[in-house]
Amino acid sequence: MDNKLDSIDFAILGELREDCKLGHKQLADILGIHHNTVIKRIKKLEDEGVIKGYGIEADYTKVGYTMPAIVTMRLKKAGIGDEKLLSNEIRNPNIASLFGVTGINDCISFVRAKDRYDLINVIQEISKNKKIVKTNTDIIMAAHKYPYAFNPFKKVDFAPRSPGKSRKNYDHVDLMILNEMRKNCKQSSRKLSSKLGIHHNTITQRIKRLENDNTILKHRAWIDFRKAGYNLHAIITMKLKKDEFGGPEFVESMIEIPEVEAFYSTTGLYDCCALVRAKNDDDMLRVLRMIGDVKMVSKTTTSMILAEYKNQDKFNPLVNIR
Image (cartoon, rainbow, N blue to C red; front, side, top):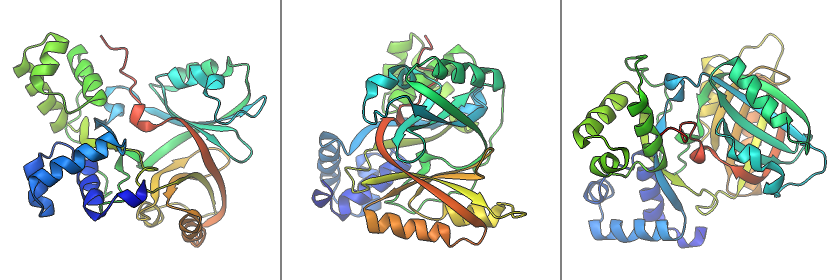
C-alpha cells in the first residue's frame, strides 16, 4: 500500500489530519495543485481505507471525563488477536483504546473516567472477565501529547493549547452535537438538525460556541497509519533516574520526536509512557535509541502492539446520548 502513495498523497493526508474542514479548492491552493486532482486523490485515499473517516478532536475533560488511566491486563490463556476474549472491553465506552502486546502483559488499555469512583467501576467491569487474571492501573497525571495530534506527514506545533473559556453549562444538546460530530464531523448543520430535531441555526451557534471554548479542538481525518507505511506500533514505558524530574525540557524532547504518537506522565512502576509508530524495524530501533539516549531516562520497556482491538479514533464516551 505504501508504494502506491506518493508525495501528493502524503501532503493531502497531512493537511486533512490537521484540519479536515478544508475544502478542495483550499487544499489545492495550499498544495499548489489542481482542485480536481485533490478530489480524485481524496476519493482514492478513502476508497483504499487510508482515510477511515472524519471526526472532531474533543477535550472530554470539559464534559466531565477528568480521570485518565492506563490499565494493563494478563489473560488466563494468551489469545492475542482473538477479539472474542475482550468483546465487553471493546464495547466499554470508557475504554479509549485497547491493544494486544508482547511482554509481561497481554493487553494494554487507555481509559477515561469521570472520577476515581467511575474508574473503580471500569476496573471492576474489566475484572468480571474470567479470561483476565490480573490487572494493574496507573493514573495518567499529565498528557503531554495525545494520539489525535500524531501527524507524521506535517510538522505540527504541539505547544499546549489555550484552555479557552471554561464553562459548566453543557446541556443535552451540546452532548448530542459532540456525539454526532465525533462520529462524522463532515455532516452539515442541516443534516445534524434533521437527525437531532433541532433548528440548524441552533446547531451552528452551538458548534461555534464549542469551538470557541476549545471543547472542540480540531476537525481531523482518521488515518490508517499502517496503510500509509507506519507498520510498527509500540508502547514504551520509562523509568527516570532517581532525583530527576521530567520537566518541560524533557517533555519537549519526547514530544518533538515525530514518531512519538502520544506521551504521558504516570503513577506506578514507571514514570512515563509513550506510544510510538515506525515504518520498519530499523526505524523503530532508531526511535528507541533516541529515547534511550535521553540522560534522564534510566530504563525503558518496550511492548510491541500485535493487535489493535480498539483505537482512540473510536473513543466516544457520549455514544449513548440520545
